[in-house]
Length: 458
Image 1 (spheres, rainbow, N blue to C red):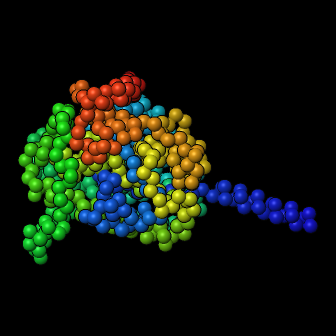
Image 2: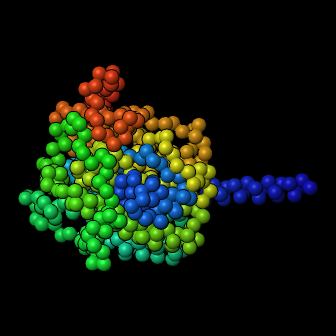
Image 3: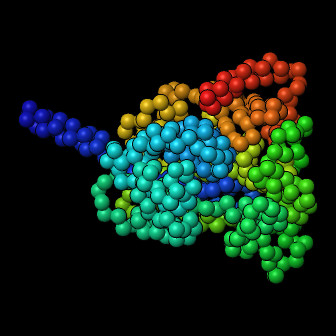
């Protein structure tokens, strides 16, 4: 009898140890320039994203997820290192970076951290990472697909999932280009004088063409999204917004020259390009579901930044407005407690928080001194263990921002200020920085932000 009990105990311990030694696979899917409202599951009735939506239906969607900087390269740097872009003096895609500090950070980047823990780490699609040039190995990844960010990336990633025969756990980061092609709509209308003409991607040209089978009147009535409710600029608008003209002249040119029809076509194209990347994501998710890894893979879906899509008479990104900085974030794995749920309470930084969250879920050491907060406990139904973020900081080429609750305060490099109360003004139409009712709160947020700026830039 005692031998039988002992055998059962040994078997139980062996099972536990086996479970503990089985690391989950990780699949990270990143789109480019997709704001948080560009999903059917987020209530958008002007597009169909069945594949992103089925992931959201199974997993946990975070409504208040934000980037560290609303442009490509700084944001991606954060996602794969867990650090603010200003750690390497990076505030826009063309910044001259602090190479010495980058070289200190990279050995603990996501790829290296998971490789040291026994993972095979792969990266596919859009690179655009500081210091990577044409080689992702500097971030600790092997190249999965390098020359395609569209259909071939989806197909080859699906083949990887269906044909992989290694027993080692994997971390795969897939970086799709769309709906980023929308960038070229303003550029082709108002090409910058200091740049050669841009080659406009075929998908954009296809989705801005009105079909012959329908009249233009019916087309705009039935298929083209209306102007957004917050189409007009914020009042009073910081003059710093016009500093965009230095690097993004086409953004201001579009503001000053586009008519309602132009803005609506732009919005229509943005929705169609989002649908295209949803199909590519579906190819990957279908393969995962058919593979042997379906029950042991964590899936993370997010984007590097959003798109203004006509709000405040702006297109592109860069600014701190919600449409530019608030991005999708969905996490799913087969045994998560909080499946089929939406978190509307907590403010998450995808650039800072995904890395430590994945480390905790995988049971591997998190690199020291990461500024992010793991939200694994929110996924696991252990909300009391979660340490909510008190302040969210963001950076861009124009200035810095701090958010506390519903208040967003921005201090621009030229001294301009902006304060919005999302609770009363979700469209960010009124700049209340000079409102006496908000004086005490503004003074406190400004002080905190100035401390952050001093610490991060010196």
